[in-house]
Image (cartoon, rainbow over all chains, first blue to last red; front, side, top):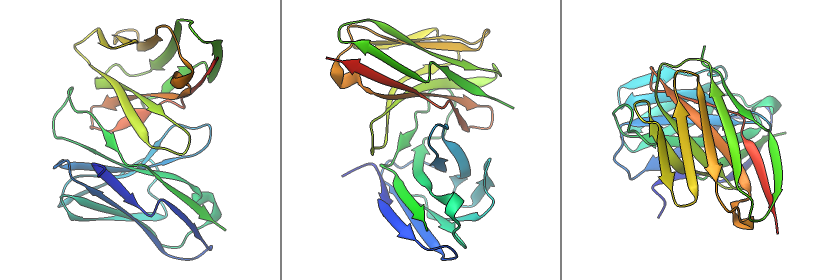
Length: 114
Length: 111
């Protein structure tokens, strides 16, 4: 089983619908992140969490919300999906620390908003 | 604001060649720099992590260097193979523990 699991892997939804992307990890890491990737661009940070009670906005949080249900689970919601939220979404985890903290990624969720 | 740039955006070389991918960043206040590989339709695989106090890291045919003062890193791939074809991404971990990403270099190794 993968260390970081994202569900669903692919999703097509209609404009205005609410959708939730889920991420779970077995690494035992405190830090979890949600990114989106658009063609020709690097990954951009949406939200991140350093423990269950900690939620922080990233570079592009508008239109998104998150929930850290447990150390192992971090969900991303699109409250009212719009077409420009069509992208590849990645969840990542890392251990607490500084220079030696490696990031581990899920397989990604390809979201299409029509 | 930290910005990460990767040059070139795409590269196509014959099998067997040695090649260098470049990554530059604007703020030297980083904890580490990481190189990742991304295959089409798949997730990201970590290749090498260089801590800010280190100069280079090696794994097999891959060697990554870091010059923090000049804001540059290179990923050297020796004796390239068709299986090396992928997009290579670099990212720096900033002082807020956020990874800031380059847009990637798409590498094609021709048999």
